[in-house]
Length: 198
Image (spheres, rainbow, N blue to C red):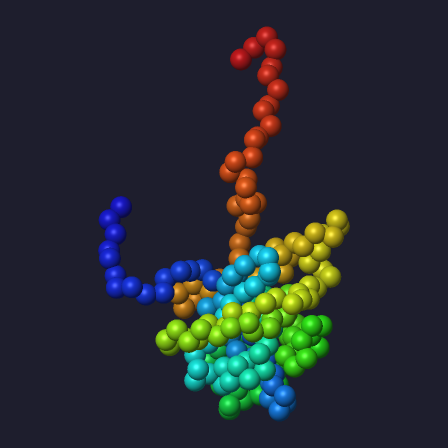
């Protein structure tokens, strides 16, 4: 199949569009939608978010050194989009989106979003000033998970959360599972051979 070559650009999709909650010692609290977020390391657990310095929440995160990454469900998608196109300078996003700030377990300032099924509490380790966005490299200190996402054995089943993804300006509800990690190399059980026939 033929392909076109375009100039370099960000085309790594789909991504989780997450709501990042933050607060500072002065009592300012905000929610910012971030699509530039990702896993950095397993041990120690780390992730990153990238923010533009002109965003209202940028200075709150930079000053406090902490934030919470809240995963987004289909039910929260409208709020997620709204928090991405409106500024905390002009609106109280918590009030406008009817979201509830809840206490984090390992942070002193940044709240979680109570309506999110998974909230990842992070402390900033370093800030890399890269260009249009600054990358906040952070340690994951705690994760709050809704009880309803655990199966009968206590294992996390994120499919129950009805999460969404962002892809090139559009939001999508995650669909059917295609496999589990490592399924392509697992040995399949062979069907028993039938006797006396084909």
